[in-house]
Image (tube, rainbow, N blue to C red; front, side, top):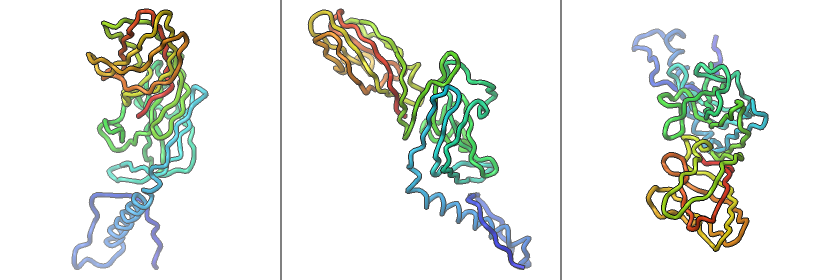
Length: 271
């Protein structure tokens, strides 16, 4: 009696094909037919959903313990040598229970990375300390774990509250500041607040100048003249700067007058 087969969106690099002369028995015909149906379904789902695959994946955390993830419009991962497409319209809460790589609790002052993977065709998430590949697509050395995003813990350790969509992260941390001079570059340590997957951020500054008008220069390439980011002629100048960091994820600056002091906060970064 005929039966209905409902395919699953799986892709393999080979299928079993019956030899000429084999009996048209279910044991020889069905595996090849099912494999072809699965791969047709995979292609239909992977390509057919491509227009929606750019829908924003959102990460959000405010309670210091959990992250809300989703929705996932379309990702492709490998499980047991088979490529699968995964989608989810739900928003999923993940946390300590999803830690991988031997972690039992959040480590303090650490960047952590979120990946999606397939467990028997079901979308799951894991949190590890291993950063993604240079393209920020998968975990380094594998296409089993699809990179979703990252977050930072503080010294408690708790998750620093943040919001991310389309690779744009928003959060607020005071960096500090001080003074400087016009002859030597001063390094402002921003690498604590910008992950290895990024080289740029959005900063809020507040500058004071107790003397004449001066210039605050941010330098993204060591040894260059810098970029004129601020010319405070009065007390209490405040504003926003979108800046690229140097290769160490830090900012370098000079000030034209020793009377200029400033404070800097980071408002977010870009991946």
